[in-house]
Image (tube, rainbow, N blue to C red; front, side):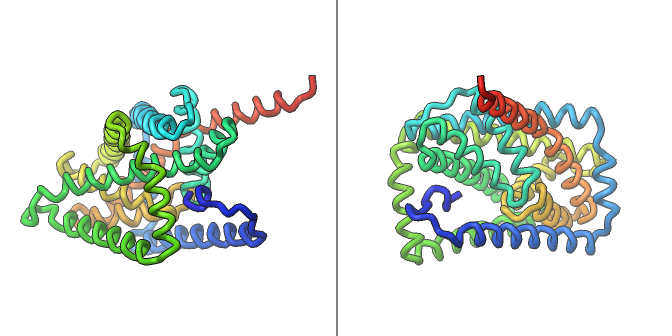
Length: 321
């Protein structure tokens, strides 16, 4: 996404080859993670997770993901408006469904967002600004998610049964800070970060926009965590919400890593590891993550309908009178 925002004025003939190479590396890494997870826990947890999905759980997931999608669209609309790009709520919800569907079925987990930015920017002939809006709202959502995760995990205390999760969250936070420090030490990256912060500061300096971003991000996170709890209940995990909510937050944080195939990869590995650290069992974690992945994929299915509708509309517009 950053490359879309800061694209060079002169096209690089090597860019397509580099993009394909990066995509292949991501796919290979995701496949390696899945294979490693299967080697540790076997195929049984994956099959049991798929078998646990029922009509009732699918219905709940559809409702929860619809609420989360509306919240994300609300956040995107607020950031885009702050950058001077109008975006009706109905169009925002449809486009967000479409981007989630593409993210779920295409490698990398970000191509749907790239498409969403390009489609919105093309309407106003401001693709760069639209890309900045999409990147900003996604990063802001991840920041709020990470803050909520730390706010819930840290007060538990290192003497609790979930103390290993706190150490894990602390390690992730330290890695994130280290990554930012390394990026800030690179002159080109530092200049890019300062430029983007200067452009986005007027948007997030508005109390109404900042409040909208925080509230919508919390609502979206709550919808995804609730879907994870539905998956846990479907699998039959013997753990209450007090244990599953911190686990879900860590697993969802890991699932944001853009190294996946159709949404699968780091999420399953992280779920197995976190469940094992919590004393519930790695196999149970993979079962829950698999059920969650199936439910999430089905729940973003309306985005496929939006994509088909867009294609039909485009064909009608190209058809001669």
